[in-house]
Length: 459
Ligand code: GLN
Image 1 (tube, rainbow, N blue to C red):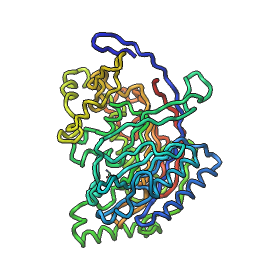
Image 2: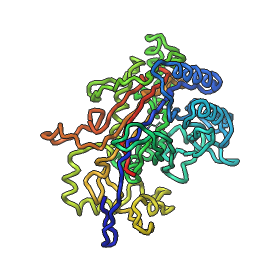
Image 3: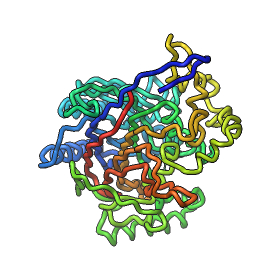
Image 4: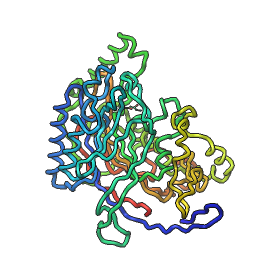
């Protein structure tokens, strides 16, 4: 890699390392007030996973947002019995035991209380020795969080290192005997959406952050809704409309023999098989809450779109030819200008990967992307790899909020797929071949999916 810094050419020697990571995702339907039952089911899922004939030891176990407590808290008083400080409480205890038992990282969403007053929607990271090594707080909040005074992550999106012993090798080597440290980021559900649903859709704040900062492992803990959920304010504030809408959901569930809270204890296990998820365009799928063992492809397609900067998109080369266009855009900001991120001047510290020989000069602008393009190249992510693991809860709360499940593992392969050479557009959904869909659970069942994913990193 050649880097031009202040007129001096610096030749960086980089090696390609092939990494093999085994990712286990647990999909749960936690109901508020039933933490103990949820913990029991978690252990019975983990027990079935470990006894499966195709089981291999995972390197990471990823749980959903608010994995044990349930999600739809309506007030601060509602949530207070469930919040915990760091290093204590049922979520920490379970994650620690899971890490110790499986000798791997565990990531789990939980409601955090920091000090006397502050509440956050957080995810804890426990290392294979059972020690908490990171705590991420949700940066972009969803409407529900406002009901209970949740604070925004004062740090904004973050990266942290994860160490994987004996998970890497040089391309010509036979077995994975080398250690690798991966640059990782956590996104909690709404982090993937436009800030407050108000920022321009195309800011792609979280996924741009990942590309700008060369994140290699993206871990998403989610409580993402199926689109047949009741979310409209007009309906929620009108009793007769609300009851009619709830009746419709209840009727749909009854037809399928499911209770109002959705399915519990019917487990779907996809352990170490290699069944990929079919690439289905949204036109050809329904968001109806049916076929519980099949992924909600409307959501899967939407998540892929939210990772636009990591997807191949043909038209980027055209923007690049008119570089003044990119330059003027890249000089501008990607988050709303009144965002804390800019007030704290953190945009100046971010994107600091480019270091000169003395380790001092850092050029953020060259690495910063707009819709995946940087000043240096049309598609900054070209030729790189990143792994995305999504743990999304399932089940229903309040008879109104249906969660979409569909947890899965993805690999962004950084390839310019030329199969579409003659067409003007590139599809920006699960059909885009620069993303590999290594497998998904269904929308409505609890369970687990384990995938080995092999990908390249530069070192
Ligand atoms: N954008 C997400 C959704 O619509 C937000 C939900 C969440 O943050 N839990 O489902």
